[in-house]
Length: 217
Image (cartoon, rainbow, N blue to C red):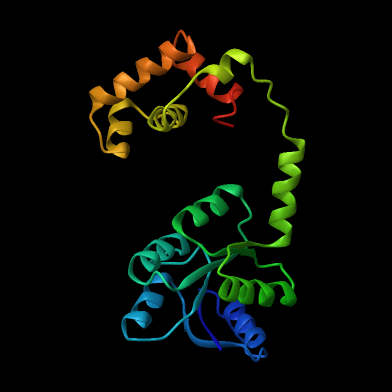
C-alpha cells in the first residue's frame, strides 16, 4: 500500500484528488494538509507517508520549500508537485529542490495514478506527458548553435564554468563568492582567467561566448 499525504489549500481540489486515489487498491490517502507547514507537523507526530502530493502555491509554506524540508528531514519520502503552473522555471526549481515528479492538474486520472506508482516502485523521477512533449518541442525548435573549432579547444575547469554561469545570471563577484563559498579575490581570478582563455574583451563578450559555445542558453 502506498500511503499518500495531500498538501493542497483548495478544499474542492483536495477532496477530488482524495476521492480519485482512494478508489485505487494500492493507494491510500492517510492525511491531508492545507500547506507545507501542516504537512511537516503531521510527519513530526509520527505519520507514516510514502509520497506527498503537493501544490506549489500554498500559504505559510509553499511546495518548493516543503520539498527542501522533506529532503532534509525525511529523505525517503518522495514529494510530487501537482500544480497548474506549467512554467519551465517552476518545473526546474522543483526538481532542483529534490522533487520526485511534476504533474499538471489537468492530467487525466490514469496518468496521475501511473505517475504515483511509477515514482514509488521504480524510484525514478517523472514529468507528465504534456510537459515532456513541450520540452521536446522546445529542444527540436531550438536554433542550432554553431561552435567554432577555437571554442571547442578551450579547456575550462568545472569551477570556471560555475563562475561563468553565475556571471551570465548577473551576479557580482561578491555574490558569486558567497554562493561558491570562496573569496572575492578568487572569483576575480577566475573571471580574468575566463576572459584570457576565451579572448573576450569584456563581460558582455564573455557571456556571448558562453551562449555560442552552448554553456548557457
